[in-house]
Amino acid sequence: MNIRYAILTVTLALVASASRAKQPPITFARSGKTASVYLATDKDRPVQSVVLRAYGRVWTKPAKKAILIDKQDRANVIWLIDVPNVRVPAVFRITPVKDAKRTLGEVVAYPDRPVNWDKKTVLYATETPYWFNQWADTIGLPVTYILPGKLDGWRKSKDKDKKHLLIIGSKVAGKKFADTLAIAKKHKINVMVLEANWFGDKSGKVTVQPKQMAGGLVKLRKQKWSRPPAFRSHRKPWPGIANRWAWISDKEGLPLVEKLAVVSMPLMAVRPVILNYLPWEEQLGRSEQTDELLRATLAAAADSTFSGGGWRSLSVVHPKREKLDEKDRPVLTAAASGPIAFKDRPWTVHVLDVRGTDRLPEGLLEELKALERRVGADTESVLILGDDPLLDDWKWAKINRKKKKFKRGGIAWLPDDTLPPSVKNQIRLMLKLTEFGIP
Image (cartoon, rainbow, N blue to C red):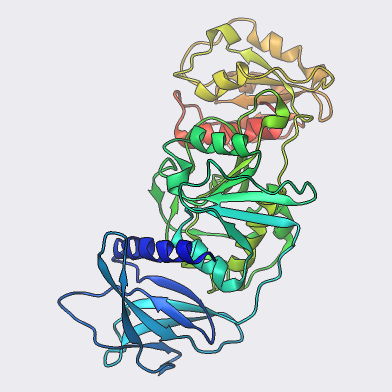
C-alpha cells in the first residue's frame, strides 16, 4: 500500500473508530507482524498496557504505546501489538493486562500468505473505508490506490484483456447516485460503492445464505455453509429509480448487494454500478464464507457487463400511458417513458395495474381476454400489479387472491395494492421489471 495513503487512512480510522463506541474497533493484521491498533479507551479508566487474549489465555507480551500525529497536529494514541502466528484466520480480544473481561478492541489475524487472485482482474480504490484498505492489505489483495482528490486526473490501464473495477467510499460516491454514475461513465469503468450517504436508512440484523445469491453470484447458490455470516445491521437499499439486479437478497427479497444501471443511449456508454449495503468488517475473518463471498463479489463486479440485447417493449394495458401519474406510480411512469426497446425483439410485456381504489373501466376484462392467445413463455408476458375482484373474473390467469398464488405461465403478480407504493414495493417492482427486460 502507498505509505502516504496508509498514514492518511490510519488517521481517518481513528476518527471513525472513536465514533463507534458500542463496537470495539476491529484491526485486520497478518500473523507474525506488528500491528498498529487503535483502542476504545475511556479517559476515566486509563490503560497502561494491553495484551491479546483468545481461547482463555494470553497470547502476547504487553504492547507498546505510540503517538500518531495527524495533519491537524492532533496526537492520537495507538498500540503496537505483535500478532501471533496462525494457520487459519483467528480473532483475538485486546484487553488490559490485569482486566481480562474488558474488551478494548479486536485483532483479526490472517495467515502470513497472500490470497489467490486472478491477475486479469484489476482493482482500483480511492477513499474507501479504512477496514477495506486494511483487510485488502492484510490478505495481499492486489489493489491500486488512487490518492484522495486525484480521481479526476486518473486514467485506468488500457489493457483490454483485463477486467477493471473501481471501488469507492462515501466521500467519492457524492451526494446522490448520479454522482457515482458520472464517475463510471467518465472513466468507462465498473464501480462498486462500499458506503454512501444516499443509501437507505440503517436497518436490523441479517443473515446471508447461499440460497440468497443471484446475478453475478448465482454460482454460489449450490454451496453449503456451516457458518453463514450474521450481520448486526445493514443499510436499506438506495430508494431511487433504475434497473436493478439483486446479487444478494434478504428474506424479503430486497437487495443487500445489487447491480444498477440507468439505461441511456448509446448503450455502450452505460456502465454497471454495484451497491453494497453490508458491513463486511463485522464478519471478515470470522467465517471462511464471508471472505470468500466478498472476494467473489469484487470479482463479479469487475466482470459484470451491460448489454442492451435483452430489452423488451412495455405495453401498459391499464391505466393508459397518458393517465400515468408519477406521484402515484413513479416506477411504472419511469418505465413507460424510458428508452424504446430494440425493434428486432418482438417480446412485449403487458402491465395490468389495478392498484388503488379507483373504479376500473368497462370493457377491461374483454381487453384482457383478447391477450390470452398471445401470452406465452417465449412470446409475450403479463405483469399484474395490485389486488382487485376483477382478477377473480379473469379465469384464464388462474389467480387465487386469498392465497396470493397463480398457476398460469407467462404471468407474474405483485399483489400489494397500495398507492402510492412503499419504497420496498417500488424496489420490488424495479427488480421485476428488470427481470422482464424493461428499461
